[in-house]
Image 1 (tube, rainbow, N blue to C red):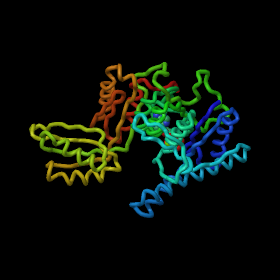
Image 2: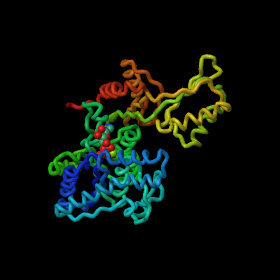
Image 3: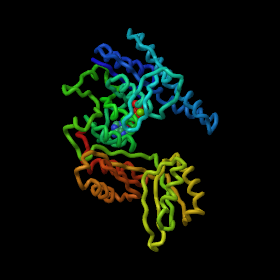
Image 4: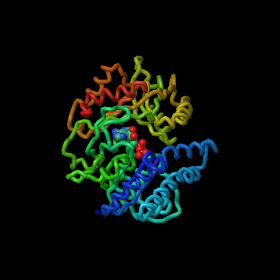
Length: 395
Ligand code: ADP
Ligand code: MG
């Protein structure tokens, strides 16, 4: 049957009863003959509580100690799951991140996992990091990877926002990567990146389905959830596969900067040096032809630092006004079919215009278009686009 990595997220292990349910899923795969490694998150709410304790202890705190504290949540779940499995007669041992370290030679496009090794290093991978741990482990063990969560797969958009969202049977690594990085938090972006590089077959499925029923895989080998796979293995291609949104960005506008060569470099250079990534950028020449207005987005958490950098530049760059806003959302349509189909962008703009939603910035790549809008219209925008691209399910 081969090796299988099973990952269970925070809501799936929220209490001991749910951990028992998780154990039944594990039991099913073990009894079916799999060699199973399980990756678990902290019980829902635990990590938030640990983070808030760190902040309460000191607003600026040591990164090593933060990792030591925040990593404790997963240790508890792993131990509890082992106890429950042992009680069911299934041999199980819990291992902490520092006991099983996956070493790589760098993760830039073609990284190889060098070894799984015991070291005394302890770090955390950030929120959603257990997705990435699971995929890394699967790559190292040459195993398949099943991600169990509180929804039964990857949907055309967040099913919590749009009830008519449809479950995708398959989605390509490329599309999933875009969707994850554009806000679909069902998988951590880096987990998809790793799965793509190491060709780990990745399946997203529900931990709340009865442990027995979930064992009924389809004849084509795919499971009951969503398979994230190579685009070649997807028969039914859609122009647009999904809509994602995020409220993690904020907008900065600089009005009336001298419109001359080098001005963008003099603004974005210092931001980059301060380690602030800029996402969307719009520049337009004002009516006098002498000056320009520049609008761009940064992560909300970077705003304070960005404003400090920009205020420090006024002497050198010279601008009339610096404003910022947190009331924005980025809405994106994603699909590999866009490579070969025209009209996807115009449909997006027309749909939003019909709803009276103003577009504040636009950015595109080969397989996605993102727009920045007023945060208050996020839900309306996502729903309208979901309908406009014909993504609705039958339910
Ligand atoms: P876990 O704790 O299991 O890691 P997460 O909360 O990180 O779970 O991810 C699952 C959530 O992702 C779902 O509850 C859903 O609201 C959200 N989500 C956002 N976009 C999508 C999407 N396109 N498909 C499925 N789920 C999505
Ligand atoms: Mg998650």
